[in-house]
Image 1 (spheres, rainbow, N blue to C red):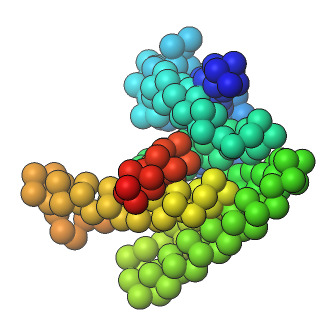
Image 2: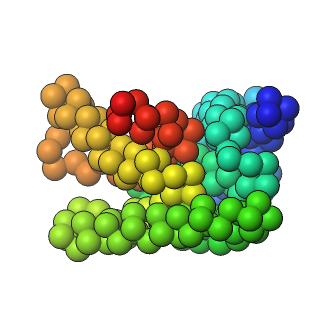
Length: 244
Ligand SMILES: [Zn+2]
């Protein structure tokens, strides 16, 4: 178990660089760059530490060293919670998607289809394959149901909110619902309710401290992804604590 967690931390740390490259490609509306982030300002390459670019020394908005740490921790945490090693690859793709989409949403207030689409297809297929090898049919069915339930709920909210909630958030809910639901019904509830709890708390803090005015829109995606990771890693524990 600890071997897979340790390996996942390493894979996550390496993936951090790819995530930074993808986020900068999205911001500049360029084709995918799988490994080499470009400078945010010019098109130069970056220094070894990836904090500045080599030609002009422009400081970078997407901090690759920070992403490397966050991604390593996220991958390791998710790996510590998977029900079986057969679904570990699926959950690592899910972790990569959560980190990437959090940063693109904070950076550009968008959850791009070009990242969410392939991430959902690849991680979903890997999860079904892993679940079938495990012969854990009930988990596969629960995952599919979880995705549809969270998607359906957010779809209704988006209709009611009329523009207050982007359709990117609705599609993101499907992916999170699948991976939280695969673990259990409790984690699914933690993912769905947790997003609103964390989002509400942060909105209140921002309004009270006047860091944000009522009119400013706060991207909701990062709260959903954070709650999704918490649900996958601690969802069972939180459910047990709540029902105790
Ligand atoms: Zn530059």
